Image (cartoon, rainbow, N blue to C red; front, side, top):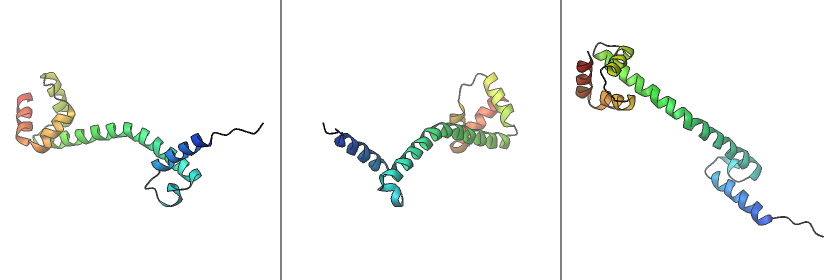
Length: 114
């Protein structure tokens, strides 16, 4: 009995990976073995960096709040401690946006918590 191979599924699998590799440089975009490894690595990076992005944005928000708070004569930790104690329920994302785009509103928050 002849060997049965599912070439249709195999080709579909390869086409899917090569489609994901579209735009890569050199053989990474059109050679199956190279593209397979490149796409697998890219998927790992994208999974990892979805987590890292959250850390990076939180860090950015903290830097922005710290800079704006220091212009008003407070450190970041003092400011955040007083914000929590005074019951203002604004998260770091909103506070950073206020600090960047609406400094007068941020100053009003600082004056309220002092």
